Image 1 (spheres, each protein chain N blue to C red):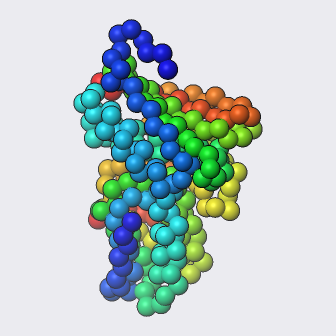
Image 2 (cartoon, chains in turn brown, green):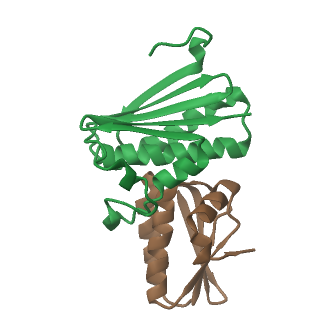
Image 3 (cartoon, chains in turn brown, cyan):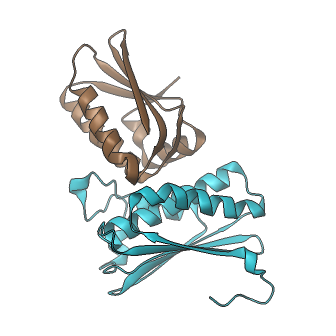
Length: 102
Length: 146
C-alpha cells in the first residue's frame, strides 16, 4: 500500500494505491489518522483509482475514519473507485455517508 | 482428497500457509489464477477474490485468533463450470453460526471490523456453507462460471 496526499482548495486529497486488506489496514488507518489530525482543509476526497482491491476490512477502516471526520464536522467523498471497490462500497452502503463524486 | 472420475488432477489445488495477513494477497492471486482455466470475466474473478478474502480474514482473525503458529488451508476444485473453494482453520470454531452471518455482527468491534464478511460472501458467491465445531471451521464457497 502506497498512500499519497495533498491539500488543494480547502480539500485534503488522499490517494490509496495498492490493496486494502487485513495486511495493509493498520498502515492505512494510521496514515489517514495522521492526515486527519492536520489543519488547513475542510473536507476530504479519497481518490481510489489506483486501489486495485478492497475487502470488508477496508470498509471498517473507511467507516472508522468517517467517524473521526464527523466529530470534526468535515465531509468525506470518494472518487474514481475501480469496479471491484465500487461494488463493495455500494453493497456496504458506504456511499450513503461518503458520496461518490466524479 | 478423492477426486471424481471425470476430474483431472490439474483441477484441484490446495495451499496451506501460516495464519498471517501478509499471505492473503498471495492466496487471492493464486486462487484467481487457478480459476482462469474456466475463462471467467474480470467481474467474476473479482467476486471470487473478494469473497475469498472475507473467508480468509475470518479464518485468520477469528478462527486462529491471529496466532501465526496455526495454519489455514485454502483448497480450490474445478468441476465442469463450477469453482468450489474451501477455507479451513483449526481454531475454536464459531459459537453461533446464525449470529455470525448477521450484517454488522462482529465479535471484535474494537478492531473496527465491519461485520460484513458473510454478507459479502453470500452476495458474491452462489453458495456459502459453514461447518464449524470446537476443532475448527471450514467455509465452502461455490460459484458457477458460465
